[in-house]
Length: 327
Image (tube, rainbow, N blue to C red; front, top):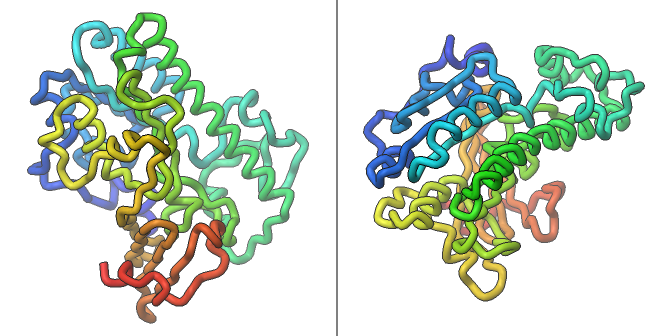
């Protein structure tokens, strides 16, 4: 149901079995203290995300300042007392675009008035209405929304910067593994939609993944080609000497240990449930990508060559994706 999608705690009960070995549990077994600071919602204990964490702080009305304060509190408690694993989650780079004015107006024009209203800070319920076919969004609105999104990302960068500064001031940065990533991007009218969760195009699935570990990860190394977030636990465990507990993922370490920038040719996947409860599936191998959507009318498959068509504007016959269709 739509309401269950927007308010998962009241309508939807989805969680793991509790039998899986979580990254946090593997690190506890290796002698790490584990703590998490989250902004609730889909990352709440209700869905089992607290499994393996000795401390799990989840704020129902979370905000970036509150998350920063709580995270610094956890760092003060564990930062200089032995190995620790800290998971930090924020919804800041997310609708609605309500960053403080210095970030909200960093690129957006204050005077712009339309469906995008930088100075007005409309509630998130109004944003959902933009999916309606009755709205016609101007090019200036699209530009304003993208400027607002950039401001949200810049605001989020201050959280990362503050935590890195804390580690640097205490001489801990050189011995700390830092990973920055996201679960999804945003569609900002690339195909007429303003949201996420209903498609698996690159604007939603291509997310940042930055790994910093002085002495372990070469500075400035870039891995080309698709990798998956499911590879993160395996990569982290590999880097901390627990390579016997990789789980379903594959360590990314070999990709940056090559003399030149590595390129992944593995098949990676993405799964989602569309706003109308349709199963969505995508698979990548090299530059080729297959998107499959199950509907009441049947199965739709589109193939793209991202090297020649990075905007996914010219679908190829599904047969061009070859073996990806059989996965």
